[in-house]
Image (cartoon, rainbow, N blue to C red; front, side, top):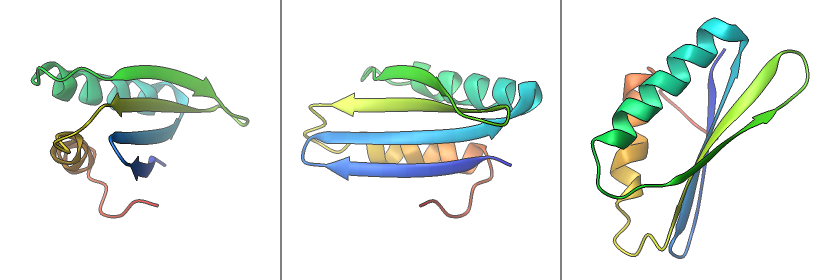
Length: 86
């Protein structure tokens, strides 16, 4: 199951997308990378391993003065068919 968490502070925002297994990993990474490529504003990204074959793909935007990341995060959630996040 794919889970998303969004954090936002002044000029900083992060979306963390947790997934399990290779199939979900490919779906999450390919989807997010395609969306990110469409925009000029590039984030920092990394993957963190969790327990039980789960990982988290993290996308962080720094100096997000115009809150551009919000629209990007909405697009990611829609593409992954996520209705709610924590």
